[in-house]
Length: 175
Image 1 (spheres, rainbow, N blue to C red):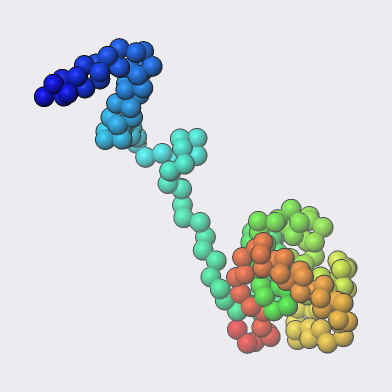
Image 2 (image 1 turned 60 degrees about the vertical axis):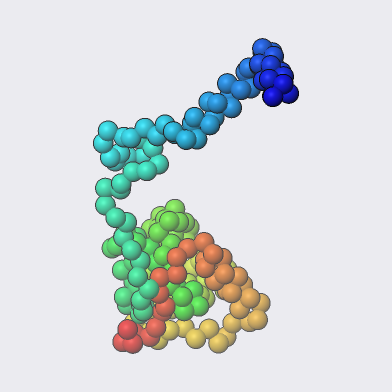
């Protein structure tokens, strides 16, 4: 019993030191905040970014569905007829709308928008002659050299990692 009284007196004496009293107050405050956190509730649902990160968008973003495209159906996604910009490389159709500065109507690669860009990407040529006719069959690319195939595969990998693959390119009349 005497040792218990001595320990209480030591505890009281140790609390008389300013550093210990400060530490005890800080610990008590932190325990209080953990048990009763202060989370302010918004008065109304925020509708814009300036009000914070948890806000409702005005409308749900358009969902890109994976589908089959033909050269004729792909044609309208050139940034002019439709605001979405799609292009195909090696049979994959990519939604490159996020890169509209490059692939849009005024961009350096704008002639590839809404088209099969496989041959142009393989040959590193952005000339209009690199595009196969929209009404004709798909370009088989059989005349490409192994270096051009590697180049096209590099572009395919780049686009796959950067943009949404939203479909596959098939022959006209097959979709």
